[in-house]
Length: 263
Image 1 (cartoon, helix red, strand yellow):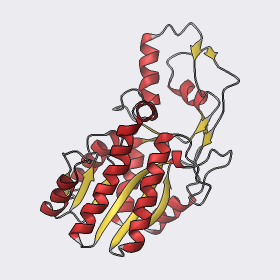
Image 2 (cartoon, one colour):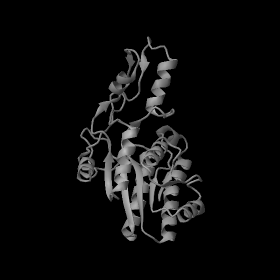
Image 3 (cartoon, helix red, strand yellow):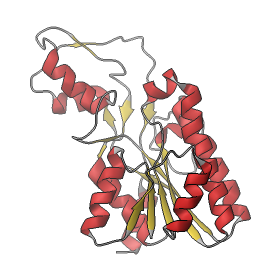
C-alpha cells in the first residue's frame, strides 16, 4: 500500500488522481503530520509499505512569515515519520519531496552533486529533512529512500502566493496598460507543469529508486520570459535593475537515465 502525506496539496491531489487511474492502492494521511502517534497508527493500520512524503509548508513567503510553524511541519513532521517507521521495524520505502531551493544559485544547470547552500529558509527546512532521512537510511538498511529535488512547478489548481496563480490574479485585477512591476525578473528558473512532476514521482516510486534525483524540465527560463508566455497582452515591465539575481536550473541527465533504463 502506498501512503501519501500532504495529499491536499497540488502535487498530492494530482498524484492521488493518477494512482487511482492506474488502479494502484493508496492511503491518504488525513491527520496532522506533527502528531507522532497519528503517523504511526496510520502506517500500522493501513499496512503502508511505501510513503510519498509531501506534507510541507511550501510557499516561500508563508515559510518566511511563520518560520516556527514551517520548522514544526517540514522538519518535525519528517522526524515523526522517521520515528514511526522505526517503531514498525519492517521494510519500507520513502519518496521525499525536496526542492531546488537547497542548492546554491548557479549560472550552470545544477547536478545532484553540486554545492548545497539553501537560498532561503524554506530550502533550509528541506535540507535539514534531507540530512535526517539520509542519516536514518544509513542506520536502517530496510529503508529505500528516494529524495526528489523538485524545481519550479506550476498548475491551474495552484493558489496564491505561488508565482503562477499570483500572476493570473494580477492579470485580471491590474491595469495592464501601466508598467507591470516584476520582482526577480532576470532570475532564472526551471519550470515544469505539475502533471509531469507527478508522473516522474510515480515512475520513481514504481521502480523503488534509491538516491537523490532532480525533477525538472532541464530548461532554463528567465522569470520575465515566463511571464510573457502567459500574459494576455504585451506588458511594459517595471524592473529593479539593482535587484539580486539568482538561478535555479536543473541538469536532468540522471532523471533521464533512470527513466529510460526502466522503460
